[in-house]
Amino acid sequence: MNVEADAVVEERPIVATALVAIVATAVYAGIQLVVDGSVAVAETASFVLIFTLVYVAGNRYLRDSGDGSQPADSRADDSTE
Image (cartoon, rainbow, N blue to C red; front, top):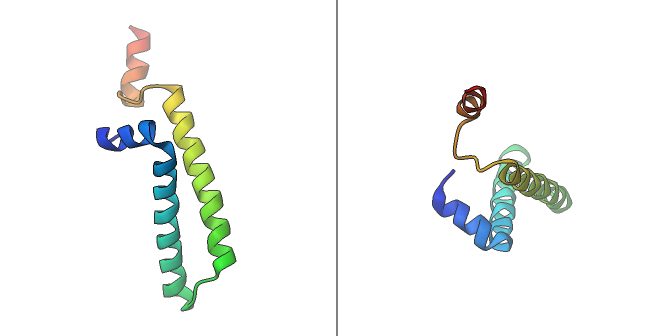
């Protein structure tokens, strides 16, 4: 992962979560505008809430399960030596 992005996630998790929610809102609203021509506020809000929770939980799980500095293939090779 990007070292600067990792620093933001570790040092300011609320800011990182807000950025994820803002990007998810912009992308989902943009897709709705292209497809439907209008934005459904409740649908967008529910998507953003669920997406942000899953993204943050997944990121936290991956961060806690290992340092992520090595690809999965090289970690498997290191354990067999």
